Length: 247
Image 1 (cartoon, rainbow, N blue to C red):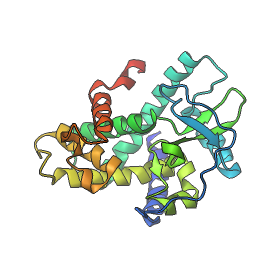
Image 2 (image 1 turned 45 degrees about the vertical axis):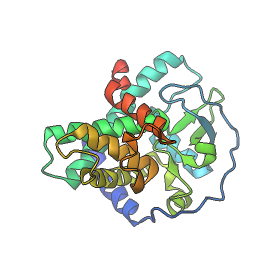
Image 3 (image 1 turned 90 degrees about the horizontal axis):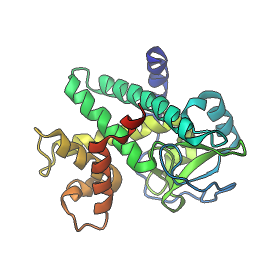
């Protein structure tokens, strides 16, 4: 998969950087057709809504390994899904950091990949698409419809990207989110509430920023914050690494 990752990465990464970011506005597309309820667990989080026709064709053509087929035995499907998604996330996250920081050592790489894995689990339990028992492909929506897909890209802050339609494509979506998480990590490294010698504190701050914006960089230290539960749940996933149970 490595050569394919590098080839796709270069073309999609350049496209992603050209897209607008952090625009505070709400998307007009709040509809959810053919709604599929969430079932919980990897690949089955939140609820699914019908995909635009072109996006559905692309998903079925390119990403058949990265969805749980709900017409099959869920235990077996989820186990297979976690292995496939783990490889996908690890490959793209690793390649991303190599290009951003060619001198990154093994510890840096391991810490970054763990941050990405846990963030994706916290945001969507690794869910981009839903494939119902009716054979219809759907797209994960959360946060009252404002959160889109695997990394829960919010249309109130990323309307430009959402409106391009690239949010529905797993790889374009993921790389766009990696840009945001990487920038959050850069801020966290210089934050007074995270030690440059402690990767755990940097990653906890990184998630707080990803989830709540720059002003939230120290949110993870405040157990009384209204969103403290998000930080607590993230850290539980970050330390427990529940995806390893299926590897």
